[in-house]
Image (cartoon, rainbow, N blue to C red; front, side, top):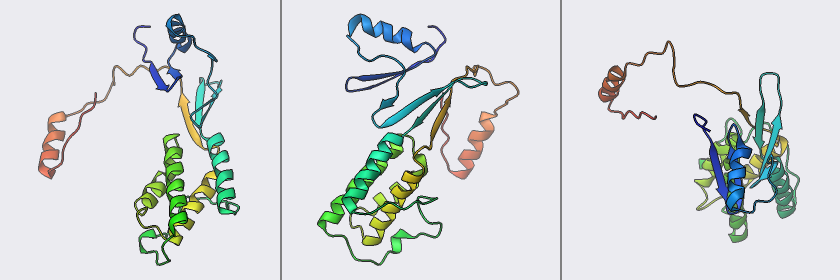
Length: 204
């Protein structure tokens, strides 16, 4: 298993293994733990997994279709409405900070917080396309107004219409130990940062 990067994700009693040889790692676990339902994951914590064989190499798509479908159905039942299809989470000329509608009552406020939490979990499942919307509306959660609630509902209408959006992971092996033709002048970079009063961060 030398020279192979592997990642393990654990949540309560579920384990996800990302590796070139995942089943070998699973076999190691089986020596100590009585694992059940081992194999290619299809669903975990609201996230769907789909493996595909392509001519250029295998891929794994991570998306949140099941979570979003169940959530949108619950939202429609909770608010007694049908989520409208939207092509964007927020309107291009939207300015929620200057909303002048009335404040939400206690029940509506609780539902607003519920939507914020659900939206944050959707972002955790890879729906980064709604992150800006959720963060913007979460900033107003202390005293949300009716227009803010309408904007949140619009965001979930977008998610419902784009439930299949996800992240495609390319599993092809790449050698990244060398970067031929790339020359980095760290001294010059640090000097420029010092002149601008900014901080440089190098990650290895």
